Amino acid sequence: MSEKKWSTISLFTIWLLIVPPGISYFLITQMPETINMVYLMLFILFGVLTALFPIKRDGKPITLVMWATLPAFLMYGIAIEMIVMQISIIATLFVSKRYQKQSHRFFLNSIMMFILSLVAAAAFYVVGVQPGSLDFWPLLIGVAVYRLVHTTANFGLLNIYFEARAAKRTYTMKDVIFEYATLIIILPLALTFYLTLNMVGIASFLLLGFPYFMTIAIIRLHSRFESINEYIKTAGKIGSDLSVMTDEESVTTQFIKNTSELFRADYVFLFTNHDQWLELEKWYEKKRFVDSSYQTIRIGEGIAGKILETKEAVIYSKRKDWEQHATVSAPDDMESVLCIPLVHNNETKGILLLGSNRKGAFGDHQLKILDLLGSYYIVALEKARYVQEALQRSERCALTKLYNYRYLEERLHFEMNRMSMGDIEDLSVVMLDIDHFKKVNDTFGHQSGNDILYGLARILEKALPDHGTIGRYGGEEFVYLLPDFSKVEAVDFAERLRLLIRQHVFTIIPDLGEDKYPVKVTITSSVGVANAPTDTDEAMNLLRNADRALYIGAKQAGRDRVAEYVK
Image 1 (cartoon, one colour):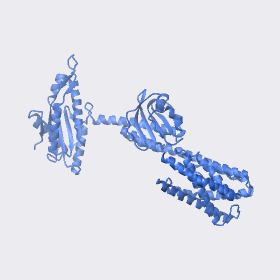
Image 2 (image 1 turned 90 degrees about the horizontal axis):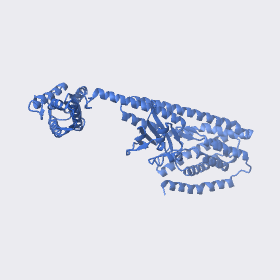
Image 3 (image 1 turned 180 degrees about the vertical axis):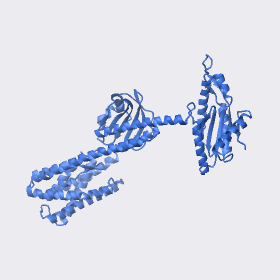
Image 4 (image 1 turned 45 degrees about the vertical axis):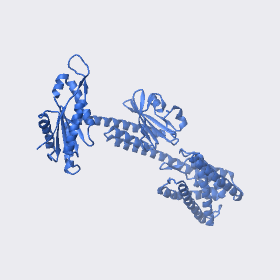
């Protein structure tokens, strides 16, 4: 049996021993001689309605049910107050959308409210006031003491509960201050309700009840508008932040994190559209990315596949509404689902699915905001892709995909500045040139020469040491920038590289002549090495020194060798 079930059984046992016998005792010993049943029904109705339509603060429902239970206590005593309060607690079960056993919450709240009713009533009696009294000032003091003791005891019981379970408290100091501040609302409202009831009778339910519930309705409507405006404002901020990012992976990662936080989603699934099927690109679960095996979904399959087929967003409030459509990978505790197509220029780029372990976690206004946020994401992704491509065109060699001369020169100056500031001790340059490359072009054609240059670039790229830079210097020449490599280490690296190139067999298809068949080709290389500060302390001199070592020390000495610069 799970720990949660044991906890519920324990609470039920405690509830069974305390609440039903306790209420029965007070109904026998404290029941007033006469009760207006219409008043009692209206007290219960007001308590239930107050519980069903709470005010929300920071996403948490706040019920001011005491404005109905306190007048019931003042009118008829603790037995009637307990009945109104316990029935109101049942109503609160329909307000919360948290994914947990409702029975657990009911037993806990019922026990706590029974104890609070008992403690607060005792404090009321201690100050010398009795239910039914109309002596205003003593009554005011008694009501104030009742409310203060009730609130203080409530936080005390919560602390005991959290410590017993070794759990983190769910309320903050702001919540404590807010709860005490409600004295300003509850105390005069409850007292006025009670006094008016004694003066004008049943009409007081209309005089105070109608304005109260209208005020609550206006506050709830205003809160809803404020919530929507806050969503829109946050979505705009997220879109703005994404628009300045220039890396596709960073855009996607940040978008998923921000979306999960904004919508309080426990799960985020991002699918990429490949026309008739979807690929699961990102899986974000409870504030962490999950490494998942390659997964595909066909069009019309599962929730995401159906969205790809219909191109219409959907909201599901509870698991049983979507479970029959789900794929086998759907998390076991996921309840609510919000899923939209990511559309740009009338083309579905992908599918975004949010999941929550709370029932009814998503609403229509959230769907529209997520759709807006999805548009921001697609535009930012397209922009980042364009910037990356433009950057590659400006910094990379179109043929080899390595850095070009312009970038190498900028990086060389950057590394030399680092050395002058003491961030690195050495900077070595290794310059490499293919031997007799013109003969390759003349024999097999320029396209075959390009194929060899591209293949060699991949070899050089794979051999690149950590924190180093490799680029195409021009023609068949390539340059390594190796920070924190001494001259000896650089020469050793160059020698290993030379042997690696010599042993590699390139397969090309000659473009000269009519016969197109694969040919295996090997090449050799000449390498020059220079170092700073050993050979120079100036950036362009370092490059020229490596160039001299390459041509004078390696090529003129017979090629297929490594030479270091000698002053």
